[in-house]
Amino acid sequence: MSPLRMIYLALAIWGAIHPMYWFITWFNENTWSLAAMVEAWGVNAATSGLVWDLTIAAITLTIWIIAETWVRKNWIALIAIPATFCIGVSCGLPLYLFLRTRPVA
Image 1 (cartoon, rainbow, N blue to C red):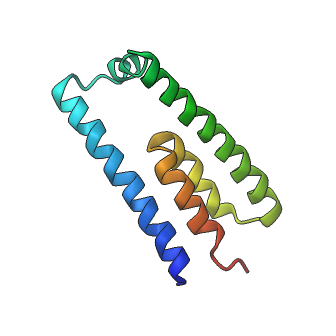
Image 2: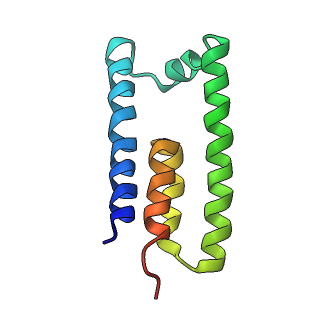
């Protein structure tokens, strides 16, 4: 495996673990309600802006993944879409880059 692929994989793992730490911390301090977390995302202009920034990035990444997967026929790369929306762009983007740079037969 190339050093670049190892970096992408490390970033995908970090992008999955680090944000989850903060989400779980928030859930433990507040409530295990997803609706309450979504409500917290709109608590002020800064968090609303960040949510929209990440939402637009996630949609853009999804379109890119679908378009490239269609051309390259690298179907396993589609797993980056649920990773993006269930974990976050910080996991989905490096995961996609990791999967995209693998040798395709």
